[in-house]
Length: 352
Image (cartoon, rainbow, N blue to C red; front, side):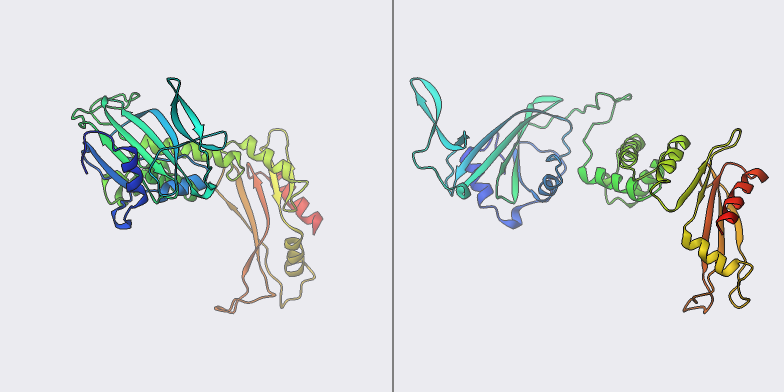
């Protein structure tokens, strides 16, 4: 619906109070918007509020500057604008030539009071083009009203190096998708950008550029590292983390530092050693005896990784009727020298 001025307060309350479910749209549509309003679903913003995040009123108009906001209330089915002060519902009256908020003689029940919030914005590249957001508590939608003629000229972001492209804020769903890719996958930012671009239904669902994905990836990694949900690429930090786990973790058994050698870490559990002694020891019966295999794996981290495995003869796989391969003690080390491996096998042999 078009209008060259903002809707009155009572008109906004009537629209939000009697909104037909079919008339609510999920997001503000793309394209030129001049002197028009939309009734937009509050579902996404309600979810953001539950997570402690700020509300977002996204559109494709460009960058907005927030100018002011107003809070008021309505009672029951009335469309009269009232206010809250010191926990009381008040009406604005003019007393002795001044506007004052006077409490109602009969205060309404708290369940009958509905809060009204209005936000006003100006388009940064055109101050005459404005937007007002109106929200009513208990309503499934908010009102987004655009007043003025949408400017035909474009404006780039203030930090943009090259001119010529209009700056439009990325849709929150796109940023959430980028964050999800960074958290749940090990893809590089360029791969994430390529995948999202190829799978997007339209241009609006694509990340803006590689730099945006890189910025989100950096922020996500920093958050995961601070929460100890992801390791760092700093070997010193990783070794320090392992050292702190020796006292409380029954898997990290030894972290050693030797002059002119990279740090070494020995990892195993008592159950692993007991199984090796049972299946690979000299006293193991022929029927259950197994060979202990040692294999060094390359290029999985800043250290080499040596893994020991053996056949667990006490169980059989249902599909092959053969014993499974079980993992034994593990070794993180910086080189493959004899002295380095001697330390691992010495501790290994001493424990078994």
